[in-house]
Length: 159
Image 1 (cartoon, rainbow, N blue to C red):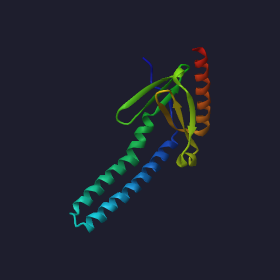
Image 2: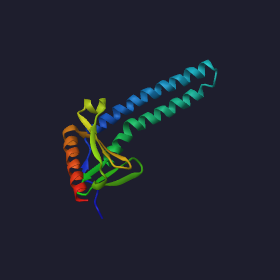
Image 3: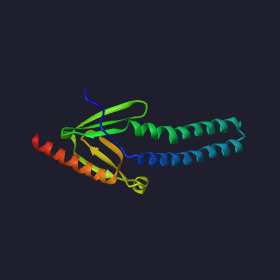
Image 4: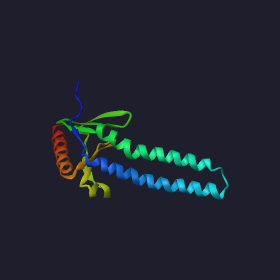
């Protein structure tokens, strides 16, 4: 039986995921405020606003403090000569093997938060789907993208 993949994503991913969750929480807070204003003007019972605010608060605390830690602990990857081994998930852990013969192209991408922390994500495309390795240091992402591309090319030539 094969062991767990060896490589973990960058520790800076925790910060990026937490910032992303904070931004989402602020947007959701605007919805909660809108519900409160709507309840006031429509003369609905105040407990509707209290329940929505409690749901927002619990969801936000979990999304900011718990989820990034679990995601980072679970996320692992390893590139072998003939496949890419990915493990990820939150409550349900998923393990995926991507055969090199199926890899069509590999690219890196960055959003504003990833760019600020000098991280990049790798996207591995096959004919059926795309797989992503999130939040790697940018140099590691570039090296890994080139390495996977080289292995996929060699594998295609063998077929």
